[in-house]
Image 1 (tube, rainbow, N blue to C red):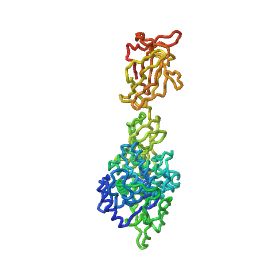
Image 2 (image 1 turned 135 degrees about the vertical axis):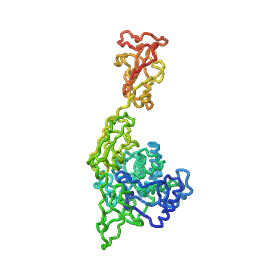
Image 3 (image 1 turned 60 degrees about the vertical axis):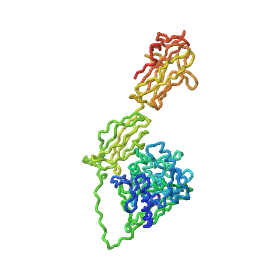
Image 4 (image 1 turned 180 degrees about the vertical axis):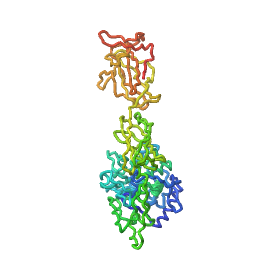
Length: 610
């Protein structure tokens, strides 16, 4: 989308000729999916028009305008073999990227490499999007922390030449409480930023006007749904989800390839911003201005937006004219062309959504839900409707997400009118949350689905070793108790557990004599709570100590889910042979309960039950 310059930009015939040669050269490079058509325009390899491209409200930018200038004919030569690029003298000025902006792109790539390694996001893709959206934040006019010096606002999305998106943020981001406008160097519309926003510079805020925040948000946006950007098909889907235009796709691919062949750093504020050849959009680096709708006697070249049309416009501007410029007044002698009334869209006739046998949604913390949410779009008479966009939104106090890490997913209904939501992934927060299904572009009552995340559990416990656990009175046990928790024979990580030195096998009350743990102050404690197994299901208990009471004692460990293991501990003077008497000896005057556990001479050292 055309950053804060509310008009689409075109070059003259000479530039078109240069671009044709440039794209032909690009098509021979290693960029995935870049080819050239007979007129030198870039295309995605094997691409066909996508009839079900996202509507404006489902894209990052609202499908508004963007810079259409292609990279220059002169690519960095020779192509660099490292990510550093070529010296300034060897690269054309268009290869220069303002220092802070370039740092933001590379920082986002590094963070995504860790957060979503399977996405394979290249920083050059972020740079290409930043170039066509805002000319790298208006040539790098940003502060030291990456915030734009003046707000970068797109045109008002009021349906006049652009998509019609009513206000969703009460003007918080775009200072417009009537309609939405795209915001910042990566041009996010407020409704998208609400869920896609990220804190990229660590200041505790998610600011679409900050290039670090915006670049990281763009990276996560492009990496959702498990897309692998090293795959041409996924790369194409990701870019089209940002702005649903084949021209936009090809322009971004061309710039991405150009930057792969070499870049250099330039000082902030000195970058070149594509210039307009006409129209009334704001100048580079200034706050976006609202393009005034043309009067009825002077119709604009752009037609009102149609949901799903590229860049939020009803159709492309005429070649050779600056997009957004007004056309000459029509000849009054020409008869006014009649406009046929378009038939209602499928969305317009949706009456309701109906659940399609969605089962109870339950999963343990950290697990994927095996059940899927399924909804059908129907007319008032119950007829199923295909090709209707259904949006699924996760709400409530939960860290559960859809596959790909997002809380919002839009799905198009199939031939049977059914939309199946992506699989849910439970987080660590337990409890119930809601997934709401809504029809995109239509106000109908949504469907609410309740989903529950239960705590992690184990169904079995076992010691990791079989060494008998013993010590002398008043001493400390040489070995710490280490256990392994499993669930359905797989390691049960992050499972809650308690450990208690019990009075007997039949009495789970904490003992008052015998072995003990120490608290932070060094005082004896015989019950430990808030224990949790590690990621591999292992639980290593603190060191155990013994008082002067001798005998055989029992340590009982219990996990969430009911897995229980009882471990024998023996306290006896050094050199004392194991006694066949299962009861611990008592010091005179003590009230220690005898243990009913078997002697270590007749046991392996632990008993377990689930």
